[in-house]
Length: 130
Image (cartoon, rainbow, N blue to C red; front, side, top):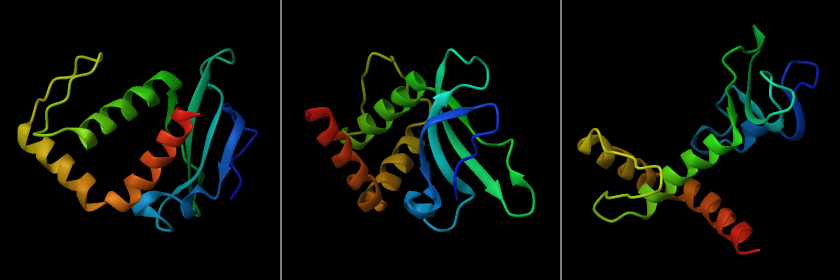
């Protein structure tokens, strides 16, 4: 499914048919596309968008749109947890662990789904090395 180009977020680069690549939700998700483009709140700002679509209601207002730096900040947190030993992470974001048991759940989830995450982390490494 193609991402829409007629709505307020204006895609510049898009991943159509993302539902076929959506990690552990592959082929069982309403996330049909990804894009980076002009944000819906300010045409001069660039944002990332997850396009959600339901057959009975069309493009969802629940589709997430984030400024690019927030996408990277979330990636930093995920990678820090993935690479951490003993669940300790320390980045410039000055994150704090609010729920130690929850941190164990995140780590277990990352470990259980390592195949999905490893592929993406390896791709990030490859790109960063270039």
